[in-house]
Amino acid sequence: MALKSWLASANDPGSDFPIQNLPYGAFRYRGQTHIGIAIGDRILDLFACTANGLLAQLPEEIEYACRMETLNALMELGPDAWQQLHARATYLLDAEHASDETRQKTEAALVPMNEAEMQMPARIGDYTDFYASIDHATRVGKLFRPDNPLLPNYKYVPIGYHGRASSVVLSGTGIRRPCGQTKAGDGAPVFGPAKSLDYELEVGMFVGPGNRLGDSVAIDDAERHIFGLCLVNDWSARDMQAWEYQPLGPFLAKSFATTISPWIVPLEALAPYRIPVRKRAEGAPAPLAYLRSASEERDGIDLTVETHLETRAMREAGMEPERISRGNLRDLYWSLAQLLTHHTSNGCNLRVGDLLATGTISGPDEGSEGCLLEMRHRVNALRLATGEERTFLEDGDRVILRAYAKRPGLPRIGFGECAGLVEAAR
Image (cartoon, rainbow, N blue to C red; front, side):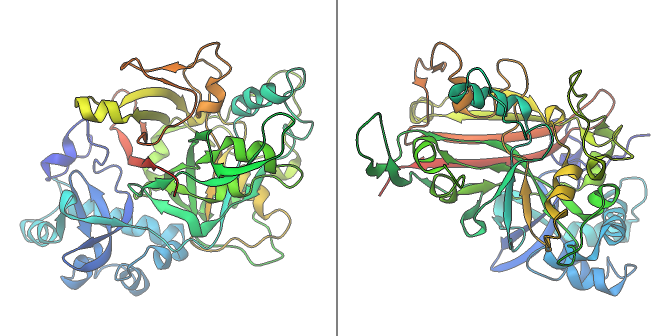
C-alpha cells in the first residue's frame, strides 16, 4: 500500500513534496532560523521536533544536528544517520502509524511554507561545475569546431572547473547583468555589460562526509558521500566567456552568480527512479577502471528537468511562464558517482557542504537543450508565445528551473523551483 500522510496537502498528486520525498532545507520564521523538512505545503521544523521530544529516540548527535541553523552538521553524520532521521520523519507524518499524541506534537512543529523565508541550506566551502552532458558538449563544440566538436579527452575524463562559492545564491535572488571585457571581430576589446547572458540547467549534489587530503573515494563508495540533490542555474555571460576562456577556462563569465534551489532531495527518495547509466555508443571507450561501477545498472536517475521563461511582457499580461526546454538527467554521459570519484582521484579533499554540479543537462532531441547557446544551432531564434524572440536573456527575464521524478503508480518527487530575475547592469 502506498504511503499517505495525515497532512492532506502532501497527498496532492501535483505536490513536489509527498511523504516519499521529505527534502531538507533551512528557513527563517518569526525571527528564528532553523532547518526543516518539506511536506506538502508545510515545513517540519526539526528544532521544534527536538524541543518537544519527537526525536528523542534518535542518537544524540542527530538531535544536536537538528538544532543547527544549517544542514552541515547533519550532512557530516553520513548515510546511516540520514536514513534514521528520514525514517523517523516518515513515521511522524504517516497516516497509518502516528498516534494521536504524536500527530498533535508533529502538527505543532509544522510551519506554513508560504510564511517562511528560505535560507541557504548549507555553508558551501567549495563549488565545482562539470561538463557531464555529451549532447551539450557536442552542440557547443560544433559552434566552434564544426568538423571536430568533441575534444579527444571528453570520452575518457569527466571535465570540470572550480567555481566561486561566494557567489552561489538562493532561488529568488536577483541576478545583476555582469560587466566585463568582450571582443567582436578584429577590433580591440571593450568593457561593458554582457550582451549574451545565458542560463544553464543543472543538478547539484551536496557533499556529506568528505575525504582526507591525499585520499580518494572509490567509485562504489561515492554515493555514501552524497547528502542529496538540488537544482542549479550556473549563469553564463557567453560573450565574456568567448574572449577570456583560453587558455585557463571559465572565469568572470561564470563567477558573477550561480543560483540553487532551497530544498535538497535525499538520494533515498529517488531510489525507485534509479536506472542504468547511459549506454555508450558503439566504439566509444569504456571508462577507465577507477570509474567503473559495480552498480551501473542503477547509477542513473530518471529525473525530468525543465526550463521555464517569464518575460516582462508575460508578467504584465498575467501570463504563465513558458516552458522552453525539457530534458532528463538520464542523458548524462558521466554519472554522479563518477563525477565525485574523479574529483577525489588525485587526492583532492572534499568537505562537508561542498557543492558539485553536473554542468548543463541536455538530451539528443530538439527541445531538450539546457541553455540558449545550444538553441542557436537552429536556423531561427527562440520564438515565444508572446511573439517575442530570444537568442540570449534580456533584462526583466525570469528563468525558472524545475525537476521531478514520476512514474505510473509512484508519487511525484519534486525539487521545487530554482528561479532568478535578470536585472540591468549597474
